[in-house]
Amino acid sequence: MGLKEKRFTQTFQEEQFPQLKAQIVAAAGFDVPLSIEWETLFEDRFLHLYNDSYPKIYFLPLIEAFKAITADEMGKEALAESLREVHIINTKDHHNPKNAYSFAEGILTVDHSPILNADNVEERVTVLTDLLESKL
Image (cartoon, rainbow, N blue to C red):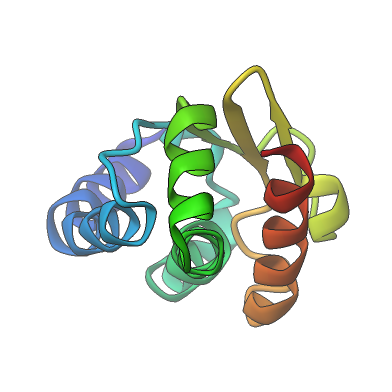
């Protein structure tokens, strides 16, 4: 990760991430540990799009899926008892949500391209909610 990417990451972490993290915590009902491998979330030619794509790809689906799961007490308890961490990474440039999410041993892994199909938030929410409902 070069200086340009480091600057972007720092700005995103300071300006957008705190609000997104707060929304994740509110939706889940507890302080969900997030492990984000920022250095993997870049493709140089798309840096100008990340302020818009990061929330759509990595954070809004989590918020909306957690809201769906925690809509009742049973869901709140199941999520709190089962989810230990969310790990966000981009190792395979997945852009199909069915391949981008996994949940094992309490760790929800989001391995998704930082840019591809960014506007398909609804599809990611559906796939993620279905995955969590089947694993909790």
